Length: 361
Image (cartoon, rainbow, N blue to C red; front, side, top):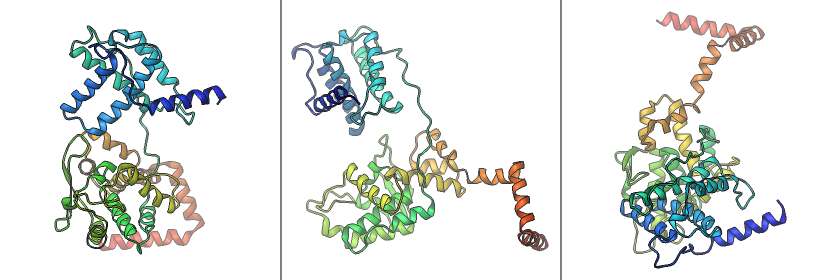
């Protein structure tokens, strides 16, 4: 990158850290920035989650900065050509590290703007919606970049130091992730009484989309959670007890970033170069499908509203496909014959097994 590009990126980063700009005059009912705030407040009243509103606020803040640089202070200043210009800006935008926004990041930026103007039109702040027919970037259908094998998952489980209190807590966190495939947010919000050891179930309260669900949890994970509750959590918690299951070393609820950093540290210690909480979610779904689970049960386990989200993992689970390929593909069958000719004892052993199996029946 050139020196000028670096300076521009540094200036933009400093501006992002500032308070959200109040565009237009304070008494102007059609000033852009106050209406953005009103839109976010309306979403909060409608029951949107704080995480959704926070992400929308960030993406709309980026749009406000772009408008500020071009002296666009009122909603009437934003026309369809202006939104198309902003879309081109988003496409060519470079982050602080010099990389462009991914397709999903571009979609989020534009969806925030189209949602804003849909609300402004409905509330009669603008006569027509300038973003009504904006074509969003075409989405990607990408497979998970990293799936753990059962052996790799067990290696990660064995990384925490069991001689310390935090090691026991972290082992319980890893076991719950590996057993249930919870989202990071759901894991952080998990309550002390949300795990029923007697029934072997875990209650996810107000997960994604504000939906509750009951899912199974394995015995090994329950054992580690009970050990953590009996030996570690009482020494970490500070009154008043907020009721969250996993807490920090000073007794506070674990935040999203803290949870990610904790899990990622053990993943890398196990010799795996990338991955964190969501990697265990991918792993649970893939291993269950490879083990013969029906896709509907995996959907219920992960809490997917749409089964198309779960069908992604059928493309990752290729063990059955490999078996069919080795049996039916001519090249694979030819290689198997060559291996049998090179090792006739193995072929005889397989023949013996077939004869024995037939004799049993």
